[in-house]
Image (cartoon, rainbow, N blue to C red; front, side):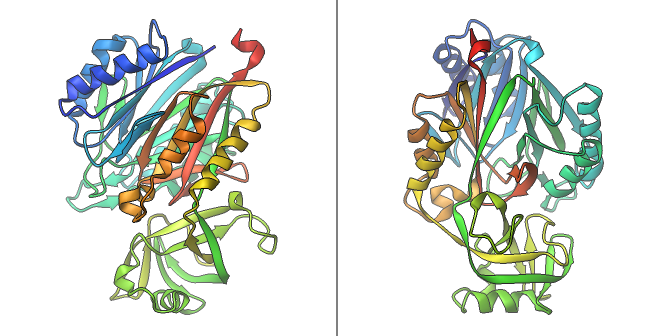
Length: 406
């Protein structure tokens, strides 16, 4: 039976923070040793000192994976924008998991994805069965300007090597909301412009729940001209004109950034609304000169049909989703929960008085050790296939068959 403990720290000294959260994780999980540490912290921490503090507790042999995030959470702690750091320490045989890494991500997302997928195949990972966590640096500042590394071509490259990206979740990592360069940990390497994958053995199962917090309003519209992440025309008209009309003039186009959200229905367009079939596409900014929307991802290609999405602040729905997730595991034993939450959903950034993470914490309670982090882009399953998402929470419950836990 894999055993997991989680730890959290807000200590400003990075070495001390690494020690504090590692000790809490080892004690909380009742662990005598650590084989894998999944680590996240904000950009306020020195990545080398934090790693060294962690290492001083978990030892030199443990594998390490993770990176900077906007914030972190565990079962009873949550925070963002400061010195938050969280870790999950796993005690499990080395045969239970494998780590992969590819560098050179900036401007080469497809190629890196293809090489990463080829690594999985070469290592004998059963891509259709094995749970997989994909983490990549979402910020590219190599030219001095902030650009985004895109999940869409990264997944497309992986899909070329691995035809069906089943059982894959992930995130684009960002250390704050200002878009500064990020760091990732891979064992003792502290790197940038990296994509990494953590693959578990096939006897470990991953169950997911997608928390969108949005629902479609109005009719379908069609992207009639797009270039990369830019949507130039909708229904044959300038994109900003159409969106302004759909919003009834409630927002000036200069306020569209992080507000306008377009939903793509991957299911039957005429069936009743099913949250699991939708992906949210969030506006990064509005180009007033060219009258176009700049999205976080190049998902809205010419011909894509979409609906305007409205945020649905219903925190009680989170508890129902979590309870449903636990009800689906049958006789399997849960041993770890991972929550990947869009940073824009954090209360201070979303403009709401509650934290959706608090509702996740309360719903999970002590049913499984929980580690969560705030991301730039989320990756989760839509109709079984991995897709990039925005304004989404991806909750993953890792389980093992009850007879295997004995």
